[in-house]
Length: 448
Image (cartoon, rainbow, N blue to C red; front, side):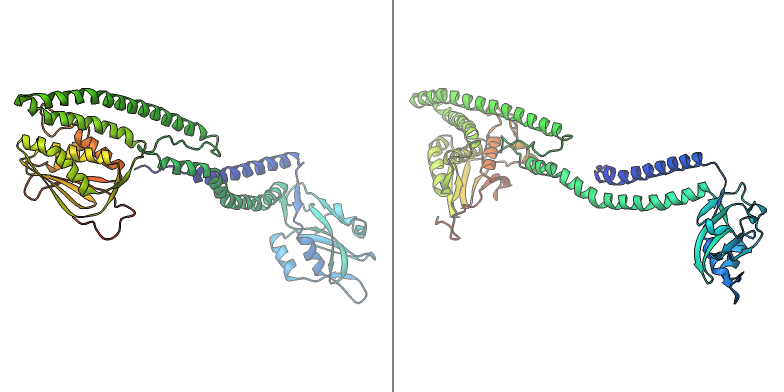
């Protein structure tokens, strides 16, 4: 499975990369401008002037002289041609190293030049000097020094690195700390609509994703999802109206047909009573699906009384068809449900067992469940999930539309229950309807 992209990479890592590139481009642009603006030449490194001031001593007569120091020796190793001139405020002066003739005339006149930088034409001509005032063992001195030299380009590159590195580190730290916080706040609306989307289901319609506080870039997606939900709700409402209208239209001809069959004298007409009852149950279950969408009309049910009532209504038809039916009541609990819908579910299961099962049908009530058991051929394991699909039939036959178990499954699912197909102990099929226990049910089961 491909790894899903994250917003952290483009918002944090890529931001750091772009900041670094921007700083590098700015650095090189500044360096190029400075180098182009510079007229050329070499500068002496300013660290030699304080070394020279520390090397100048004063004798008893007040004259200046140069005392070799370790620091001065290190400079001479790097720049053998190093030299300097030192002068105090009273005009005493001393020189060290090969002072170029161009600067020899300044000996004794440095007190009027407190600060300055002069460049050399080449690296080794000895003309690059720095004039600074420093305090050493001989007191305050004006130093003109020539030591290690370098070009402006290198100095500016070093300065640019010193400046840009802290800036980049601060930007990187701010990005790593602040960007996740900003992303989290910016995507808070996305997390909220994701939680809202999890609540959308077939039994909960009319839900729309909140468009407020959603980022502008994601708003078109939210609008598209809401438009799709609205179209689905409209299509579902049209389907509900069609089912309700069809079921209502079927009730009248079924009722007329049942009256005519009951009034008929011949055995053939009476044999159709079971099929007419099945049609009536099917029409009522279609209406039950319509009512279930409103999620209303539920009450506390006694499963034993409901089972006895349904079996009593169907017993004459079953006996007339040569079937035997019985009700077994074990300790049970009350459940919550719509009485008419549950009666028709049980009626559908009993009629289904009569048609597909054997000769004996057993309805058992125990706990919070109802079981319908027959002694027929049973339902193969591979078919037990498929038989709950609409228009699916276990075997080709002339009667039935393949909607019975699908409608049973939908009604029980809307009651938060579960339908399970098992093997009956003596062969045949056992269909169990398990309801959630009633919230007000006590720990003591009802008496059989």
